[in-house]
View 1 (cartoon, helix red, strand yellow):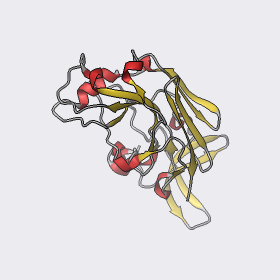
View 2 (tube, rainbow, N blue to C red):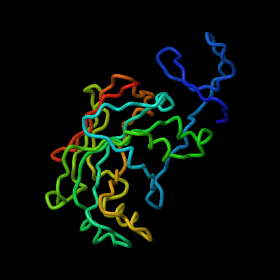
View 3 (tube, rainbow, N blue to C red):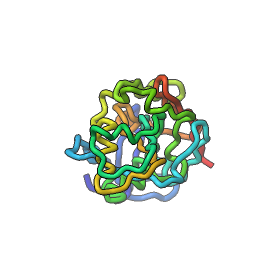
View 4 (tube, one colour):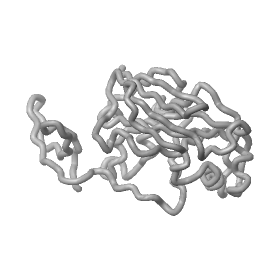
Length: 233
């Protein structure tokens, strides 16, 4: 799917994508595109690492101020979030959980328009790195209180409506595998926050992107939750 200026527009009750050919301020000429502008994602042989800067972190109840460039396809990703308790390097999967301080909930907010290959060369990190794009929970439950991090219930709601609901046993990579992989040849520093991936139900596949005033809640049952309003300052 080739395009120069990707836009989305309504056709009846559905949403389509197109290549914006002209814009005179009041009318638009668009060449409709067939197919999906996003690369189809398949499970990989290795854990995929996408870094967020520290300033992407936000509080559990903060209002999220969204930059204008990130508003067009703003999406939620409810995720189990891991906090590393001590420096780790070349840690085996068997010992990986010994390095976990605890667990909380997180929302890995993403500007999907920057995930289109033609827009940023598949720079998923940039799409997730805007300030406040990583709100995490108000509590960290000690690892000793969670005997099996792959047996937790995750629910994501937008304006009170359930969008994601699953168990962490559906994760492609376990917490053990993720921590071990991230420490391979690199020092994983204590205090590092790891979001572990999101289940089905994100807004992109239904073309239901977040807008100003929406409230997104991510809950890890018995662990923590975040609840953040989206704002366009």
